[in-house]
Image 1 (cartoon, one colour):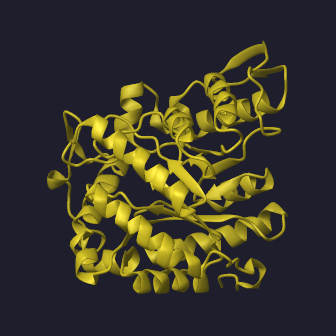
Image 2 (spheres, rainbow, N blue to C red):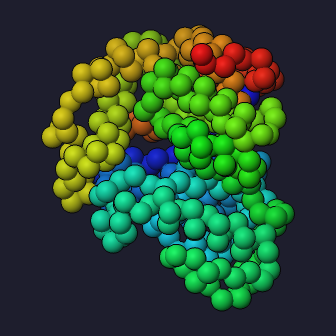
Length: 356
């Protein structure tokens, strides 16, 4: 199994931006030293849910301070970007990372962001599909041209040309069986669900993924990527004490998804967000998320491997405002006492029963 760290760069209390970026750099360096496979960066705008408007720019910096770890994004929000400029940046970053780059794309979902970019959220999917087509074609073919609904691009050559051929591996965030099948059929890796999803939602995503692989006409094995909130401690008491940060994360994500989160001068006001008892209940989150001692977290991951064919776990260690030194200690405990149980594990995905 592969493991990565997921950088959201959140700060409920609006810490100085320089401190948030220093912490992210130190977390990436530690991930590289501890043997994580990936450092993955998010993209969010205009709120304390994420101080990270450009994950590609962040990766360019992190690559200069790391040696082996690969990078990806989860995700570049394509409808908010110019596709040929994004293609240029991907090609350039492929060289700056010396071929350690992969790129995840998504449609976006936050009305708060789309309003401020003056992009209609209702059109995010067709805009996304056209942008992804432009980026893939422009990186794989030189020259290329495009005549579509949103973009008309005359004959153009993207420079530099990417280091990896035909381009860095692409990921796509999606939850529908049809879109998954399309992505798998095109050779893209699929990201299913976010950090806040329950264990049952992960299992449901696996069943959808199984159906999508069958529908795509491809064969096993396939990369099945999931994201989970993670906090590992020598003390179960300490692990449970950090659940308030998980609650903040859950309430912020839900508020942004439903356009009910009030944002005051960038600060996400979760204290004004409607409470949902099950989703906001610390005991429920403790059961669903990978919080606990190394032994407890290892058992929770083992349980996931029994129910899903997970091949890659993207770990959100820095949730809410868990103190930075606690995040680093959590990463160390995970890498030294949890990861060794699964490093050589790969599921026989074809043997998992289909739902129904």
